[in-house]
Length: 226
Ligand SMILES: [Zn+2]
Image 1 (tube, rainbow, N blue to C red):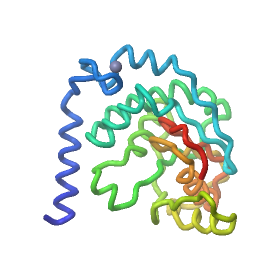
Image 2: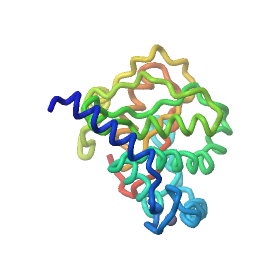
Image 3: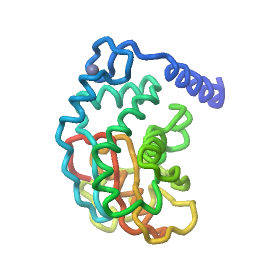
Image 4: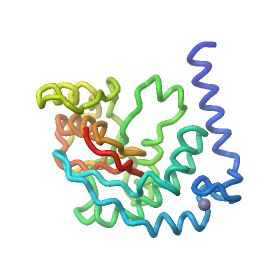
């Protein structure tokens, strides 16, 4: 079967999975008509917001820890093509993060972290694009800007010297959306783990003229480094 047929099939299956209501809450696995049941939404809203991590490009924020109930919703999106799980997480992120983010005014642009072409084809959609669009809608901002391209997977940064680290970062992403005007850019992804992907994408945006970068993830893994 050609890769184009496979890509079409996976997209079709993803769409199908998206239209069928989940019978169980993705957070606690209890029967539920919603992606996250009322108790899981309450739990998510009651959890403390992970503290923002300062970064050379600005800051990195996550709405929730990558634990219950966010972990199940992320998995449902990633492995079962459930886009609505990302919509729910983006709504939670808007509720928890944007008052602070918007205090500095609206961003110049909201940019999703892209997947590589092959992975995007296999999965049928990019969770970061869905999250960015839902975040823009929730904050009444213009739709996300396209133009960030993943040139190759972000290599591990741990244990590298500054020169090699910068070379790696500059090779991972390319901005092809025209010169940016020096304003703040919100860079959106589903999950942040080491932060190396955000750093690489932020580097490309700043090379293209972006000012401060606010990296925004739906959920954050506790691991550090990179
Ligand atoms: Zn639940």
